Structures are given as C-alpha cells and as structure tokens.
Length: 270
Image (cartoon, rainbow, N blue to C red; front, side):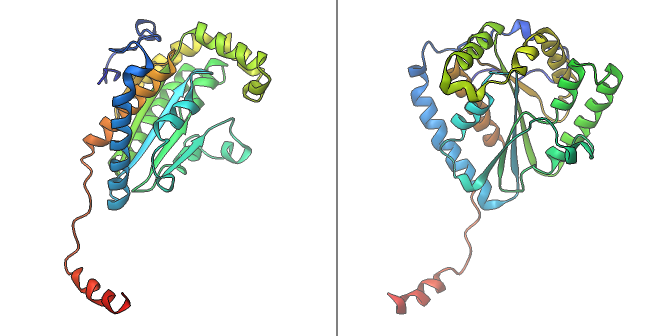
C-alpha cells in the first residue's frame, strides 16, 4: 500500500511529489493481481455497506484539467453494483445553485446511508476557480475554508466516510492530453477552449490547491495521487478506497432468528 495521504497539519508542497511516480511497480502488468484482488474485495465491502445501511462513503476527486477524474472513477468502481453508487460531476453553477450557499449543490448529493457517491470536482471549486480569477479574496477564502471544515465534520459525524483525492499531473502531461483532444476528431467532444486559458494559470492553481489541502484536513485528510501514469493512478485510488472501507469495519447483518419457519411455508409450493 502506498503512502499517498498528506499530514493533517503543515504546509503542502506539490512540487515535492513526483507526478510520474510508480511506487514499487514498473508496468501496468505488475499491478494486475492486486487490482483483481482489491476489486473483488471492494464488491464484498460494498455489499456489506448496503446491507447494514449504517454508514455511507463519499469519494471527492479533484485535479487539474486532463488529470483523469472521470477515468479514475470509472476504473475504481467498474465492478461494483450500480444500484449502490451514484456519480456527480460539478460544472459551472446554475442560476438555481447560485441562488443558494455554495455548499447547497454538493450537500444535496451526499449519499444516503448504505450508498457510495463520487464527486468529480466538488465544493472546493467555489474557492479554487473563483480565487484564481480574483472573484474570491484571501480573506473570503479563509472563511470558506472554515465552512468547508464544518461541512465535512458534519458529514463525518453523521456516518459519511469521506475520502478526498487529488490527482497530481505534470504540465507536460496536460499539454500532451490537450493536444490529443485537438488532433483526434474522436476526442473533440472532450475539448473546451477555456482549457487553454485555464492552463495559463497553472502556477496559481497549484498554489491555491496547496493552501486548500492544508487548510481543509481537520475532518479527513487529503490524498495526493501521482497521475501521469493512468494505471498507477487507478491502482492508488482503488487502494485508498479499499483501505478506507476496511477501516470502516463493515460487517454483514446478523442472522435473523426463526427463519426456518419460512422454509416450512415454502414446502407446499415445491
């Protein structure tokens, strides 16, 4: 198991984390057996989560454009029961969402007990994007960080296990992906001209991500996953998810006494 979790206190320095790191592995093939084992375990853990309906799991995935947020969610949860999971992608807020506090649009999608939810982007967007573009001051950002901490503590106190993952890529990797989206007609649907503009703010995004992760780790810590290698990104995210659910100590419901009588009732129908 890798060490992707950030300390709960202290500054965050993304430049000190290699986005091309592959841990103990050399190639995707090296992860095959562990990936299969963890996927099987995740299916079992999800079934226990759904059966008892005492806890919920929320996975928040953040990252720069082209970091693979959709892809990692798809790969990690490809084998789970679709009835037990929901996924939400948070784009530019709608008029309705802007008429509420910034946490409203995410709070309404928090999973109910027994369920898993994944967020592609999240409540952190309000601080990150608006701060990069000068719409949120440093003072306002600090207030919002406090509100985020209170919100996340509320979730945890009410049975929602929270996992926060930042997919860490290099600017060179992002450039390669953007070029593919432009050059490949089958990828045009993924391209947004604003991606080029946002790329110009790379340094500011990195700095504000560092501040957000350092300020918002009181309820649950952040995990920084090197993501230049897609297969290692998937391995790390799956490992974090499975390890988190192990710590939840999920158990199957206790047997119900007296079930034998229903077997007797079935006999006339056989």
